[in-house]
Every structure is written in structure tokens, then in C-alpha cells.
Length: 391
Image 1 (cartoon, rainbow, N blue to C red):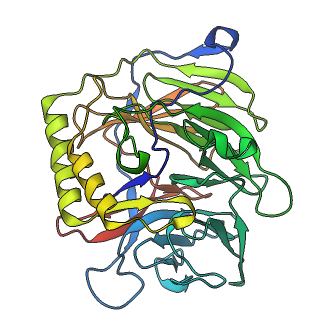
Image 2: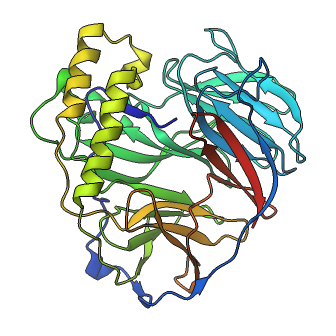
């Protein structure tokens, strides 16, 4: 089930990483020619059912992850719980439920799991990270400053804590809540959050309802992946340019491939408009205010109208998503010839050595520490399953 999350006061725009000029950074230029590898991943098992009362009937999968023992964790945003399955796909237990008490969820948005099995869920309603220990105990850590963590990605950091995007700059207070986003390394214990990179969020056309200001469809968006040494790979998605940062946020190098973005086609626009019309008609819009504030119904209706009134960017960003596998290599999914197709997945070392391109593949939704990966799949009836494969 595809959804859209609109965040009051700041919605993601075209991002520009606030670092030194490109000319002052070492650039690693990789060849444009693909060394394609055509192979199939071997499916191990799948979880998810069309009907029933079990935790494997998913209302809306927001994220998946593995721990060090290859157990699979599935964050079900609609049912407000985390379902846990063992390495063979057998159901083990659930974590959390809807509510306001310890270990309970209001608006769960994203999830990270450490190798030791600590589960960290970002909850926009509570304005906190909800953290479950291996024994099932729960505690919470408030979001830093005034920033609300964005709902796209929450990644565990190898030195502890998580990395995520925050709306505004928590260190600067409320004055910078609009027009800036910050990539934060957030501790789950003692200590202060650390800024790894800042990104600007230019406004879209005019000001939407309650200041939503949605950016044009297919605009470049910020992507990041946490590396095995604690560094971070970041990309603005317009061209094939990936900045490799160390754990302090210093740019070490820029990885480039001379692959031009393709132009947005009439079919792309039609596909996007069909999806937006379906979303606006079905009530699938999710609007999250500060600390999960309740949004009045008239605002929801106006946002639905604005969803149909959309601008389009001229070109499709080259990079769709990035991830890091068990060997520490970057997996970079490229845009394909259409919205429905992938342009393949490049496998590149953080040092800039191009290894191969997996033709026809999509980026897995999660990697395990021992060579497995998980994909979130949805059939024509809207039934979601999580497929675990060996890569």
C-alpha cells in the first residue's frame, strides 16, 4: 500500500547538501558502461496472509529489518505493532500496540533494528523513539529539539543510536524549522545528537494548506545510507553523485558516474496523476503535525485538492534509493525507463570501486548481516507480504 506523508510547516523539497564546494572534494569518476550481472535471488520464505486474525495480516508495512540472528521484524503502521518472525519465517511475537503508555504507539513511522536485537521505532504521535530491549522491555527517548523525524528512513548506527532526517535544525530552535532539514545521529542512551549534514528545502509553488507547500512531482529527494564504519553516503538524486561522509559529517570523497537523468514522459505524469487521484479518493492521505497534532477535516480536504493540482519536474532523478549490504558495499538503485521499471542496482564500494550492476533488480527493503535480504511486495488485491531471499 503506497502512501504519502505530508508534514506541516515543511515538506521535502529539492535538497542540496550543505558541504564544501565540489571542487574542494576528491572526486572518484566511475565508468558509464554497466558490467551487468543477470541472476535471480533464491527465495527462502515469505510472511503475510490475506485474511485472518494473526499478526501476519498486515495493514500497512512501513519497514522491515533483520537482527544478527536473521530474525525478521515487520513494522505494521496501520495495526501499530512490530511482528517478529524467526529465520525460517515462523511467527515469534509482537512488540507494541496502539496507546499512550510505555511501549505503545500513536503514529509509528519507521523502524531500525540493531544486530543485538534492540528495536527502535520512530513515533511521530509521541514525538519520541520507542525502544524495545531483547527482553521486551520498553523505554522512550524524546526527539531532539523542535525537529520531527521524517518518515522515510531510520537506520541503526554501528556505534549506537540511529541516523535519520529531522525537520528543521534542532540546535537552532524553532526559527529554522521551515526551509531546513538536518541529517542527525541520535543516541538512544546518554549524549547529545550530532549533525552530519544539513539540507535546504526550497518551497514549491505558493503556500499550500497550513503551509504544506508540496514540491513538484519527481523533484530530486535526499537519500542516505549508513556505512559499516559509521560514515554516511548521501545523494541529492538529480545526477549520479554520491558524497561519502565520515562519522563527523566531513566529506571524504564524491562518487560519480556520467549517467544523465532521463526526461519525465507523458506516461510518467499519467501514472503519477492516477496514483494521486486514487490516494485522494480513498482517504489514504497521512498528515502529521508537530508531536502528532490532530489535523482538522477541512485541512485534510484542502490537501486532497492540492494533491491533484501538481507540478512536475522536467527530469527524473537518476538515483532512486541506496542501501548497504552485509559486506559493506553500497547498493544504488537507478531510475528505469518507466515508473514501473528499475534501471538496475549498481554495487559500489564506499571507496568508489564499481563492482557490477544487477540488471532488472530493485533495491531490497532490508539487508541482513549474513547475506539475506527482504522485499515488501503487494499483489493486485492489495495484500502485502514480505519475501526473504538469499543474495
